Amino acid sequence: IRDLGETAALRSEFERNLGTCMPLATAKKLEYKILKRSLDLRQKMQAGFVYKLAINNLSDFLPLPRLQRLLSKKIIQIEKANYVWPETLQNLRTLRPASQKYLENENKRPVVVGFGPAGIFAALILAAAGMRPLVLERGKKVEQRIEDFALFQKKGILQEESNAQFGEGGAGCFSDGKLGTRIKDDLLSLVLDILVYYGADPSILWRQNPHIGTDKLRPLIKKIREAIIDLGGEIQFQTKLSDLQLLPLKNAAAGGENDSQEVYKLIGLETVSAGTKRNIACEQLILAPGHSARDIYHMLAQKKQSMSAKPFAVGFRIEQKQKAVNRVQYGKENELMLCEMLGPAEYHLACKVQVQGEERRVYTFCMCPGGEVISGTSEKESLCVNGMSYHARSGENANAAVICAVNAGDLGDDLFAGLKFQERIERAAYKLTASYAAPYCTVEDFVKSQYSGEEYERIIAAAPYAEERNEVKADQELKSWCEEKVQVSYLPQAEKCNLGHLYPPLVSRALALGILQLNQQMACFAARKSTLIAPETRTSAPIRIERDKKTMLAEKCVGLYPCGEGAGYAGGISSAAVDGIKAAQKMLQSLLNLADDW
Ligand code: FAD
Image (cartoon, helix red, strand yellow):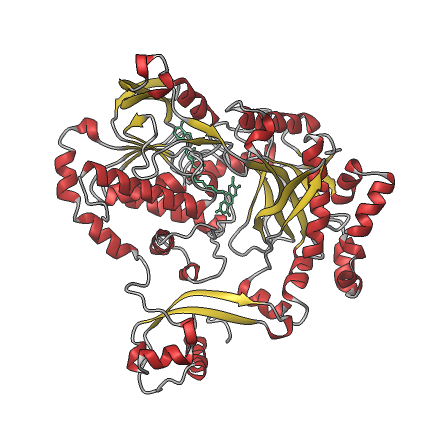
């Protein structure tokens, strides 16, 4: 079956093909919606798509039992295909009279901190339900933020409150806009439908690995901002949450000596805007500040809130030639057709390596086909990198994080050990170039910095570089692409450095071994000249803010809903958005006394 491409001709061809898959009477029109399309590349010579469809009137064609016999378990009956936004919006509107009554006291107005995916979606749901949320965002509007980031890329001038992490749209704004996630949640379809409603390409609803691209994401965020305001919400930019005012509720510990048992009630917030502090009465707060708001973790620790260290991962961004990735992933036979239909190829690779008697997971993450490596830093004299791409994904290089897991126990039992580790690495990376130029080296240089002599020979013999792989040697064109110099895409500039001592030996050796192992899974991953750009440190939050599973309230604070990536409950745009929706739902449920299954 060929791609739909959203044209009528292809759609009718699709339906004809569908007819040959299932013995359907042709007189009637099949009412169907594509839920998902995935590419089956198990046999490269016979690549094909697998479609998952919701069919409304299937039993008009054949009785269901007969179809089930014909297609064994491939048909299941469902009540409702997906959440859709206009319908959900209407449902939320029915809550408006109750919300209005609740809001009779202005102090009760809910506040959302952070306007990244989690905060945006939480605010949209609250606004649709008539709760007139007040959103506080430390960074600037997306339009100004783009200018600030452009200045950084041109001149290396960093604005600490307006960068790839902070500002309208959150960390996802300067991204590839990949919407794939490992979480399974019915609300994902609502997130996608909302994005389509506000301007994303409808194909994100059914593509296997949907992505938007930073250029298309930015106007979309602006539209959702306007929708929230139209629905009664208010957004204050360049306004930072700096403190919480909490009232102790009770001390459950015997004798009151153990203050770790203390529970508080939120009564207000302190904000800072243009250097001026202000207090706001607030009893209901959705806290979605992302993982780069390190000051928030310190503030919560001072307020005796429950938090725990969580695993995270660190490493590099690797860049290869995208044309080599296309060749290896799609195969020479399908390369042109699949590039045209699906865009440049992606990869997700993972392996386990043994280092110093320990097993470590090394994997790729947040791969950006045809993208560029960008700075993800939000602090002065410190450096970290990430990846972004435009919708067309037309850049010369592929890039991805290649990272090694750091377990919570690796760094001792200090709650802030992971965060301090990230900060230390980021400052050390900055010192390597003494500027915001990113330090980089080639894969070969890095592996040689970790292994030498016989050990190096043994490792290379077991897992050779791309150029020595048989698949690559058999294809002269691919071999020459693997041998080409990879121009680092990072701006303002990149500087060749020795990255061998940036991380502790366990991490560095695991990464070196892992990079060669991953090359066994995708033959062009680690060409000798593929580049490693440092450091990739902010892959996820190193701290979790503990919350109740059912109510989503912070364990020790009534009225506080920590959510999104910063709270440790999401990793990526879609999962953060889902978490934001859930936090808003829970808040509405509690404030308006809605039933559990609401
Ligand atoms: P964030 O997006 O971090 O948003 C938090 C917001 O809170 C920010 O706007 C910040 O300014 C604001 N804030 C922080 N502290 C305060 C405060 N004290 N007061 C007021 N406001 C505050 N994920 C994907 O799924 N796909 C991708 O393609 C992808 N690419 C990425 C590329 C880059 C360059 C980066 C940095 C990340 C990428 N990610 C990607 C990760 C993704 O962006 C995050 O997982 C997601 O944005 C997390 O959403 P969030 O709302 O929880 O937090």
